[in-house]
Image (cartoon, rainbow, N blue to C red; front, side):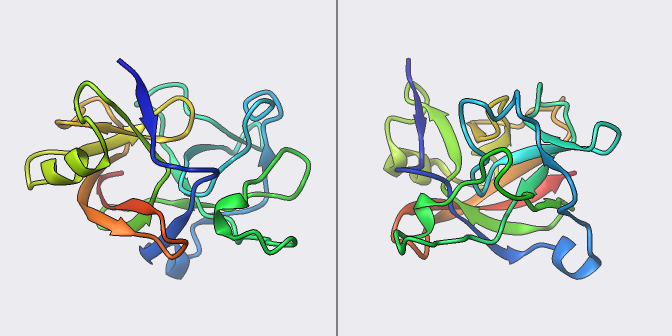
Length: 178
């Protein structure tokens, strides 16, 4: 059994319809938790926790955590492309959008178990109204599940496989529980 990630370098996200853009439920005033992001940066498309008391952005500790969508504006100073962008502690403040039921976005920041889905093609082929869901993993990636997770605070439903603007494969998600 191996966990397969959808990203080639770092995650990319496209906001199709996210209410936070219109409602202003965007959190940009807190820095990344240095301990949580010491080894890996915050990638766009991650599901992250906004800690208002500690004034930090953290990785979730369980599927019961209330998470938002990391969607920072990419800064491409070296013209490498969107997949080379991630936020590291101390660089600048990340942007986390509050997720609401009905929000739609596309990303390659997901992971799946290769004993459940052999590859991306098999994962996309399994998408149906009653199969392929996503929840927050403790590393911030969207953990792809075959069925719903009743204990999840935020749950996503896979809509279809997509090609992201950077040419990589991704999944279109709709928020079904927030």
